[in-house]
Length: 88
Image 1 (cartoon, helix red, strand yellow):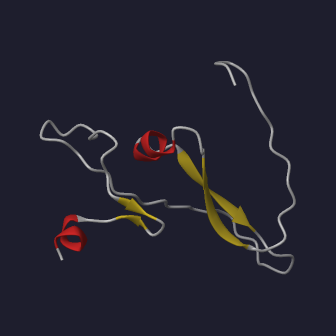
Image 2 (image 1 turned 90 degrees about the horizontal axis):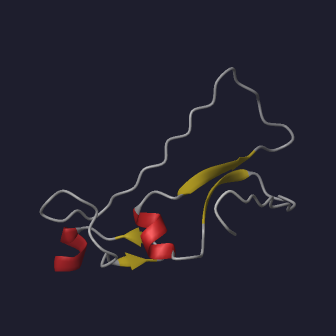
């Protein structure tokens, strides 16, 4: 897609739950820059509330200038591994 264009995804959600989504284009860089979000699928019998709050947590690798480091982050299907996990 070009800048300024839009695209609408349409799909059927069969299972209730909380999921996350992200682009699969330039994935490593986009994930490190926070380009992802939460997707909450409510079941038919779930209660409703006045306010929903969704908190998505992530960690990023910073360089010595406290800027997002290049795409050298150690990623696995379980997420970014911290220093302690790498050193063991």
